[in-house]
Length: 128
Image 1 (tube, one colour):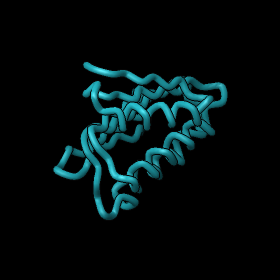
Image 2: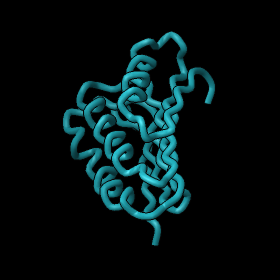
Image 3: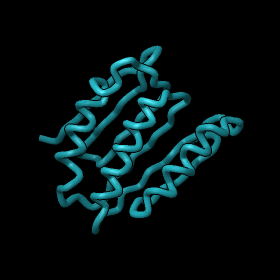
Image 4: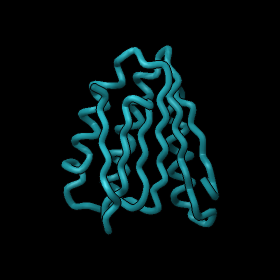
């Protein structure tokens, strides 16, 4: 049975959707928890099991409005893990910045894109 996880957005956690059957993951909103490792535990555990499998395509939409430095580390680890497992697969990351004045998010996406040479990394500014 394919893994599926959906968590609603709260004041300090993002909306999470993972649909293994569709090869899709989405994070959306804000993330500034004290215990971010626990929040991302199920996501990281699933990715650790899923990414080495022989799937063909996977899409990760990341539409975060704000996140703290602990979340930045979690996102970087997720992207590095995807990048490492992108051999003979198409992994697409859509880094969505809804506010074109948010230079911090745009720069963060550009930095991640530079480090992830095996991913199809799109920076999308504006409406998604």
